[in-house]
Length: 80
Image 1: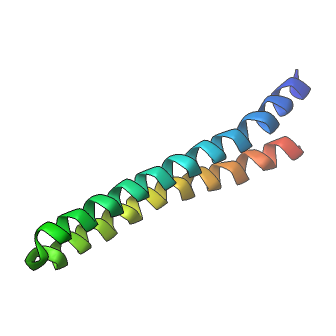
Image 2: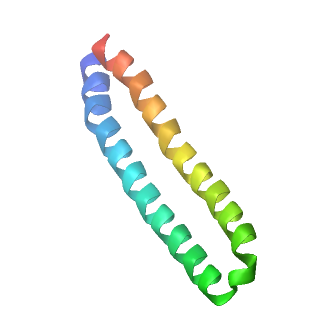
C-alpha cells in the first residue's frame, strides 16, 4: 500500500508543478500584455496601471511558489 502511495506521488508531483508553472506563465503573459495595451491607450495613467500589474504579477508568482513548496513537502514523503 505505501509503495503505491509513493509511486503516485512521484508521478503526480512533477506534473502538478509543470502545470502550475505553465499556467503561471500564461497568466503573467496575459497580465503584462493587457497592462501594456492599457498604458498605450492611456499614457497618463501608466503609474497606476503599472502598480496594479506588479501586484497582480506578484500574486500569480506566489501561487507558483506555493506549489513549489508543496512539491518539496511531498518529496519528503516520497523519500520515506
